[in-house]
Length: 372
Image (cartoon, rainbow, N blue to C red; front, top):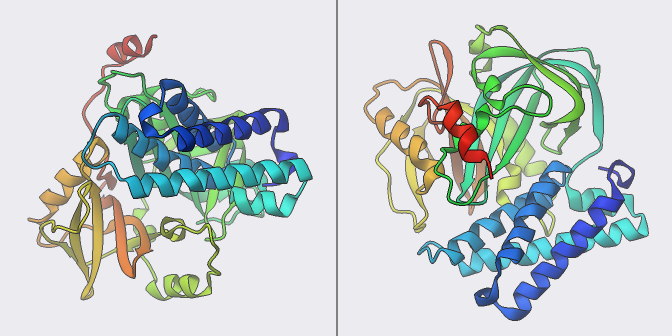
């Protein structure tokens, strides 16, 4: 992302306010963390994500999670994790601010971790999986993993991997399930739940930014449109994965000081796999299901909070399956271990989303609860 692509008048005050909030928090201590401080961090996360500042947005998301755990006196609060991501957020925000003031495009792009966007007039996509993250009384976020079926842009080939993210603020005290927010109308007059109905989706007047991994991040603009098409049937073409290509990408990656393990994640599909009972893995906030694939053990990590309930239940059901369906998920490498985030299985009717609650949502109740 180039400096010319951002709104300096909005971004500069956001970065300065964020830096000051972090400095105040570090100087006065967590015991003085006010509602205003927490609100500043949450708003900064949402705005940086909306503006496409992926590295800052992801860092603030984790810091907000830990701050919420602290204020709620939760046992799984991690001082080490909170300090690491809070300081990292300060470094990135200060670096971005200096790059803006100096007009340093190269440094701004490196710190934002977002390459320049490519305008897209028309795309047709399908959704293979969805990841979910919930921070109580703060926000819920969904990442939709897409494949391009057809395009009018020469820069985006058929089969290209895309990610579209949607973040929803949560009203304090709300008991609405995170999936309920997927039914809310977007600015472009569609609903996020439309991506999960196994149908072709036509997207017009959008933008795509390509990451170093080769995946593209889809951004919907004010004039974008999203329309559902016919039911998609040819799921079999996506049930494959080449471990050698993943190894080549890993070996060719030049490490940088601000890199995180999760930033090297990639989409994979496992066939002829088996899942075993969860084991203790030294983390109080998560469960770990060993997944065996070709005599290799993958660590399927499941959060113990609200965002892991459905995944935990579905993996437990798959313990009884003699031949589980092909598994689609996100793989990253953590302390020399293969860490997997399962997203979906490919049944006879396409992907079944493992971490999404399928219960019906009462839209009338939803809209009433969202009124402040």
